[in-house]
Amino acid sequence: MVDTFHRVTIEIPREAGDAFAEALEPHVASVSWTAVEELVTAQVLGFCETPPNEEAILLTIRTTAEALKLPAPDIKFEQMPVRDWIMDNLKQFPPISAGRFFVHDPEYRDPIPNGHIGLKVPAGAAFGSGDHGSTKGCLLALNQMGHLKIRSALDMGCGSGILAIALAKRWRIPIVATDIDPISTEVTHENAEINQVSRYVRSLCAPGYDHPEVRKQRYDLIVSNILARPLVRMAKDLGRQLKPGGWAVLSGLLLSDANRIISAHHQQGLRLYRRVELGEWITLVMKKPI
Image (cartoon, rainbow, N blue to C red):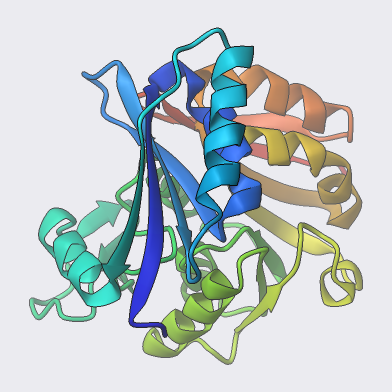
């Protein structure tokens, strides 16, 4: 792992989070955005190992703001020590319960609650601590699916690998975990080792479904906790790779995103089975008929 990383922080109106995250995505290795329910503003965060092209980002964000008829947002460029960011996250994110899943840092020393599945996820420069509404929504959805017979699964956009690890611990099956960000796939591999499930989890760096190892098989379950627009773009690929009778857990979505995600996957033959709502975030569970 690198000792330092570069962070881009953009303060934007919360309703424009998805648009600005999409605009920043080509310029950094990882991107996400977060909002606090009682605030009207949100933060878009981008991370990369090498210095980003500040001029290109400023131009892209300014153009996006003009298209949305918004004032140009504040942008901060920082180089940060990984350890400092990790320690900040350890203070901010205590252990989290999501159904039977119990997410904690490896430094956590208290006993895991009885009947729970422990997920060790260090804070770091890849997304997915379990605290975010979309990640927690996915874990709650998977918790409700524990009775299903799942033999193969794909984690599309794996981030920290938290969902791939949850799948491996719950079903003890082969998991393909893929992300466009090489840092994320490296972190997923390391976290799988920390959780002693590396024999189940194979992490691959690829843009979407464009990898022969991803395409060579079909899956009983596909989880994808990313952004709304990539989910729409990849709906056809998901429909192709999901087995008849298979399940999809889709997240990274605001409540306002739900209808277009449902529609895009409905066109591929999937049907909505369940919604998991946490504040303004929603996770969709969809099924492909046999």
